[in-house]
Amino acid sequence: MSKFFFTALGVGLVLSVAHDAYVTILHSRGRNGPISHILCRTVWRLARATASKLSRKRRHVRLNSIGPALMPTLIGVYITLLVFGFALIYYPHMATDFLKVPEAASPRWIESLYFSGVTLTTLGFGDIAPRTNVMRLVAVIESGAGFGLISLFITYLVAVYRALERRRTAALAFYHQADGSADVVGFIANHLVAGKLSGLAPNLRSVARDLEEMLESHIEHPIIHYFHTVEVYKSLPRVLFLSLETCAVIRSSIDREEHANTYERPEVRTLELSASHVLKELVSLLRLKKNPAHSVEPQLDESHRREARFDHTLASLEEAGIKTNRDREAGLKIYKDCRSKWEDSLFRLVSHLGYDWDEVTGDSRLLDAAERQANQLRVEVLK
Image 1 (cartoon, helix red, strand yellow):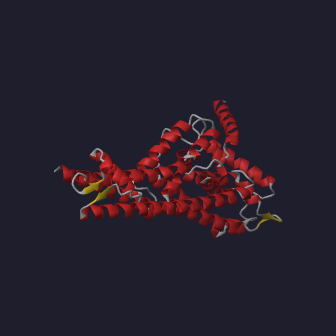
Image 2: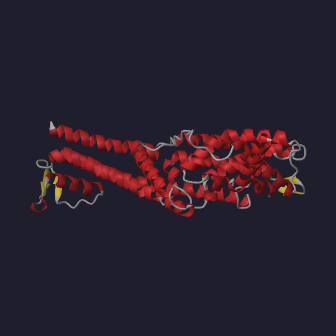
Image 3: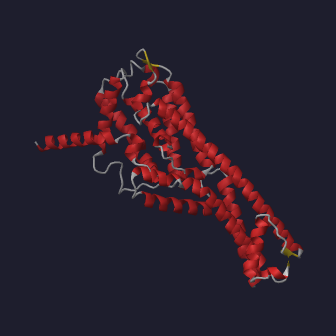
């Protein structure tokens, strides 16, 4: 009875690792296997909780180390579980089905772990060897599993870092086109030639394609969720914000008649749909539920904050020589509607990934203006 129990427990542990590796590494579904999911989520939450007490710079440095550390930790967990799993299979047979040199004599559980470890890593010192066909077959399966797992993980590691490189490259290109900030006016103004917005559509198409590639990278390699960049401008939340904000500004703030060729371009709608889809998928994959106790800016009414952002955008566009929407109230309504569709989801993603809302969106410099506007409105109401 004990022999069956140890064997069943060992086989179950080995199959659990095999299933987890298959789901995490080979099956592109956007989520880790059960073992990987528990490990990654637990480590990330603990790291984020401890890092929240640090300064912003130190917090980013701390979180930046989590992703690279999770890779060797995960393979270490896999190897450890496989060693224990096969050791459980060997344990009830170690006394009768193995040949051992006298000098290698040890307690049976140590012999089982030792033989499992050297077999999985294909070392095979020969001081303990199976003498029955069944145990020989199990040893061959274990050595194949160890070799296959390590080879597979090396390939996975290369693929993950290639995906991260593509993500950083796309984010960096957007960052430079936006004049090194989170202000989309710089991105739009870079395409202003002789009073006309020229060449904006191809760039919007390129950004939409980059976002879809980023999403596919997260689906194929779920561990990428936990790679936190120290430079915020290289982060996926910043790219998502710039993409969605660009569409909102084009729809609400620029003059439709003067820039009809830009406003009516299908690339604007395509980018908006792509960015919204990517954001929705990431929120779903990471299982980020809405928390009513938190908001983007709990101290200020969101309507005033959005209005301050809108007015700032109009002023910046005019300063850059871009004609703006003549109907401010209509434009403001469009802008608020656009922001309300994605702002909460983006805030949840930003918070989960360990960033601050204002450093991703650049809203911090608008808070004082929004507060002054809200206070002025309160005074007028009291009068």
